[in-house]
Length: 131
Image 1: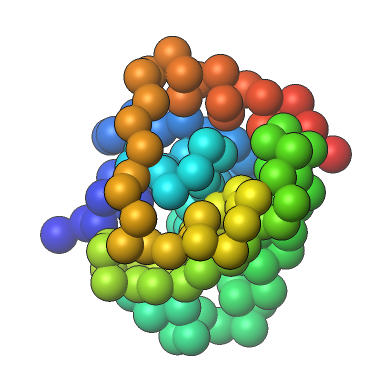
Image 2: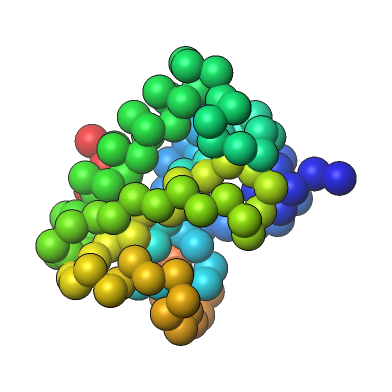
């Protein structure tokens, strides 16, 4: 069965897309730790990040860097934290979390809730800062 991320990539499930290229896609986490929390996902469904071939691994992290620059500007955060956890969805992905303090990237924190319109506004803001 396809992962939820594969279903998003195929357009079966809507998302608040930030960016997409031939190999990767990024979109807002719908249960974010902070405003702007974004997932960067390879289009190829591979469960474990370190099983990606060298090119895809590099593409994924280069895509993450592009998005992190836009997140810094869109959220005015101090840093963008990157985390690879891998237990939630069996599809490799990077969490990019805008951080104002170190505790913002604690995955045991209560998740935030935003309306569809709020998520749309957040994604539009981030996209406006993409190079």
